[in-house]
Amino acid sequence: MNLRSETFDDSFRKWLKPYAYLLAPNRASRAELELARNVRRSRYQLYADNGNFALIGQIVKKYAPDASTLLQAVRKEEKKLRRQARYGELSKPLAAGIVELAGKAQSEARENREKGEAALKKQQLEIGPTRMIGVEDTTMALWLSLNLEPEYLPYTRNDYRRINEVVALRAAAERKALPAELAGSYYPVASALSYDTAYDAGQVFAEQGLERVSMGFGAYMADDHYTDHVIIRDRLIELKGLMPNRYLRTALAAKGFWDGYRKKAGRPPEAFHFLGLGAPIMVGLVALSSWGTTELTFDATSPIKDAVEGTLYVSKPAYLKIRTQKAALRLASGKGKSWDCPCPFCRAFVKKQPFDYEMGSAWFKAKPADAKAADLAPGGGLYGAYPLLSEPKGGELRKAVTFARMGHNHWALQEIMAGLKKNSTSLAKLKRHIEGVVSAYEANTASKTFARAIRFAFKLAAGEKI
View 1: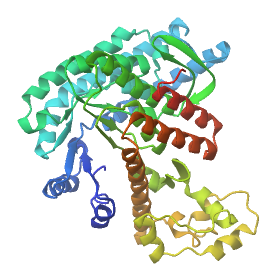
View 2 (view 1 turned 90 degrees about the vertical axis):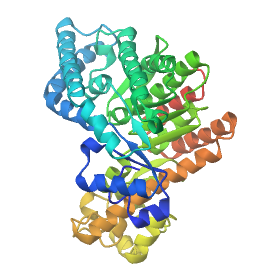
View 3 (view 1 turned 90 degrees about the horizontal axis):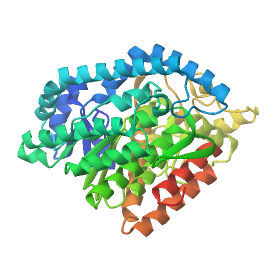
C-alpha cells in the first residue's frame, strides 16, 4: 500500500491486513514521515521508494510542449506512410529534433540524479525501511513519457543495454555499502522500452548477481497511445490493427526481463517489485510471465486516484475497472438489482448511507441515454439514489465516499492476489487460472481492441507462439 493517512487508518488495516507500505521520503510530508515511524512500530514491512516517478513528471512537464510539437510532426509523416513509423523511417530534420529533445531530457535526469542521490539515500535510511528501492536511470521512462518511442530514435540495443549495465554495476557496489540488514533487501531499478531491451536488462542484472529487482511500470500504464507492431528478438510482428501500448509494453517488458534473466542465470530472480502497477488484469498476466520468482510485490497510487475519479475495481465476473456512472445506470435500469459488493468498505458505507433504488428507477423512467457526471453531482437525479457512486463537493460525505471506494479498490486487488496465490502451486495450474481470467475479460469488456491486446499478452506470458 502507498502510505497515506487513509491507508494507515485503523479500519483500513483491520479489514485488509496490509503486507507492507511504501513511501518515498524525498516526496513525503512531515505527517507521512511520522506515519512511517508508526509503520515500523507496528511491525509492517516498509519499502523506501526512490521517488523518481515524481521527478520524471517534473521534467516531462518542462518539455511537454516540445514533445507535443514533435509528436504532431511524427503523426503527419506516419499518415503519409499509412502506418506507424519503423526504425529509421522519419525524415532527417524530424529525427534530429527528436534526438535533441531526448538528449536534453537525459542530461537533465542525469544532473538531477548526481545532485540528489546521496541525500536521497540518507532520507531512505532515516525512515528505517525493511526494503529499499535502489539506484535507477530514468532515461527510458523519460523518453517514453515524452512520446519518444525507440523507433523514432537512432539508438541500438547495445545503447539501451549499456544504460542497464551502468545501473547494475552501481547497484552491486551500492549493496555492499548498505547496512547488513538491508543488503539482502535492496531492489535496484531495471529499465526497458520493449521486449528486447527488457531481455537485455534481465541478462545484465543476472550477470551482477542482483537477485532482487524492481522496474517502473507506471510510465507504461500512463501511456494512452496505440501501436500496430511489436518487436520480439529483433523480429518485427505486425499486429493487424492498433492495440494499446499500456498493456502490450507492460506484458513485453515483464516477459522479456524474465526470459533474459533465466537465460543468463539459469533461474528466475528471487524477488521482484512492480513499481506503479495496479491494473487488475495486468497483475495476473505479469505474474504468469514471472513464474518461478517466489516473491512478487506491487505498488500503485492508481487504486487511490481511481477512487477519487470515480473508477471501481472488480474481480467478478472479470478483472475490470468500472466507472461509477456505468454502475449507476446499471442499477437504475434494473440490470443490476442492488449494490451487493461483499467488501467491508462497501458494507459499512451502505449501512450508514443506504441506496434509494426507487429514486434511481424513477430517474431511469425518463429514458436517459446514459448516466452523466452531472447526474451523480449535487442536484443531479442520481445524487441521492446511490451515495457511494455520487460525487459530493466536499465535507464528511466526500471523505467517506473516497475512503470507501479506495478501500474497495485495494480489497479487490487483495482478492486478485489471493486467487493468484491459490493457483500458483504449479505453472500448469496458474496458466489455467489466467486463461480463465483472460476469457472472462474478453467476454465482459466493452472494448474489442483491449480484449485483443489482453489475449496477445496472455499468449506472450504463457510462452505460446505469437
